[in-house]
Amino acid sequence: MDNYVILALVATLGTWFVTMLGSATVIFFKSPSARALNLMLGFASGVMIAASFWSLLQPAIERAEKNSAVPAYLVATLGFMLGAAFMWLSDKAVSFAQGRFQSSKAGGSDRVNRIILLVLSITLHNIPEGLAVGVAFGALPKGNLSPEALMGAITIAVGIGLQNFPEGAAVSVPLRREGFSRRKSFFIGQASGLVEPVSGLIGALLVVYIEAILPYALAFAAGAMILVAVHELIPECQQNQHENPYTATMGIVTGFAVMMLLDVMLG
Image (cartoon, one colour):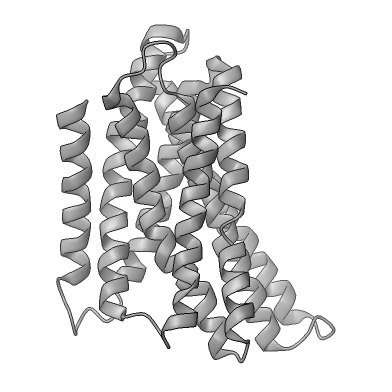
C-alpha cells in the first residue's frame, strides 16, 4: 500500500481518536463547558474555511491548470459544488429519515428516534470530513515530499480533529441525558467517528491510483468542508451568544488566522 495512503489512515484514525476523547467527557464530566465548546467549534470553523482554500481549492486549481484538459475554473467550481451538494443530500437524507421515524408507530419511542437521528446525522457529517483528510494526504507530491506540503495535510487533519471533539460530546452527552449508562453513551459516541478512517482510506486510494480525479477530489473536499462549517459549525457555536457574544467569533477569527499563517508561511 502507498505510504501516503497509510499516512491518510493514520491521520483519520487520529481524528476518530479525538471524537473518542469528546465522547469520553460523558465519563468524567456531567457536561462539557458550553463556552469551551463554542470556542472550539468556532476555532475549527475558521481552520476549515481557511484550509478549504489554501490547502484544497488552490492546489486543485494549480493541478487542473497543469494536467487537465478542462479549464481549471470549471474543475474547481464543479468539484466544489459537488462536495457541497453531497453534504446537502446527506442532510436531506437525515430529514427524510426523521419523517419516516416520526410517522412510524412500530419503529419505537420518540426517545429511540431522537437517538438514531442524532447518531445518523453526526455519522453522515463525518464521511466528507474523512474524505477531506484522505484526499489531502493522497494528493501529496510523489517523490519530492516537502515539509510544507506535509504540514498542509496535517493542518487539515488537525482542524477536522478539533471539531470532532465537540461532535463526540454532542452524541454521548444527550445519550447520557436520555438515561443510557456512561459506558454505552461513550461507546455509541466514539462509534459515530469510525466512518472517518474508512472514508479517509477511500479518498486517499482514489487520488493516489486515479490521478485524473485529483483536482476534482480536492475541490469536492473543499465544498464539503465549507458547507459543514457554514451550515453546521458556525450556527452551533453561536448558541448562547448573549452570554458570551464574542467567544465563538474570536474562535473563528483565530482559527482562520492560524491556518492562514501556517499555509502562507510554510507554503
